Image (cartoon, rainbow, N blue to C red; front, side):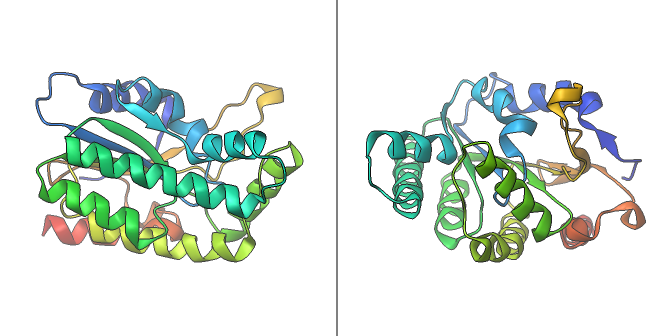
Length: 233
């Protein structure tokens, strides 16, 4: 199924109903994923908070750790926040609890834990946000730092830019639901222009629900669209 690109204003109500449906009986892990600087929190952070599940934001955890531990480095705080999120995810899987988290999906550990959740019969619903290039991710992280946020090494961003998509393709065949958004269009809060993420594809219950035409797909998302098309055949 293909359609023209869909902006967030048209899809937000559908997305919220899909991710917040409380009639489910199975526990669910909600994943807001994407490389640093993608704008994950701006796109769907509020909706994830309203999911009814405990919600973990590693950026907020890093800020809390830095504020509570004078003298600790940003790298140490980032590491501590990552380990905190990992422990919470492991606990949610073991206890079969609803849980929501943000992650870069750039490493193997979280990917393996999500595979474990799926194998245990826990739903995994992923909303993935990407940008047109690693340079744009880097620029947005630098802009965040200029506003007082914490930094991420450039080499980490470049590494995660590729690895996060590889990991998403690995998870794609089994996830309960997947939405992929391009968030490359610049927002301008001062001008009242919110983020305008474009829906690239939507898979649910191993079926394609919505997908833009391949020629209209941003280059960064084409491997994801191709992988999704192969699953339909």
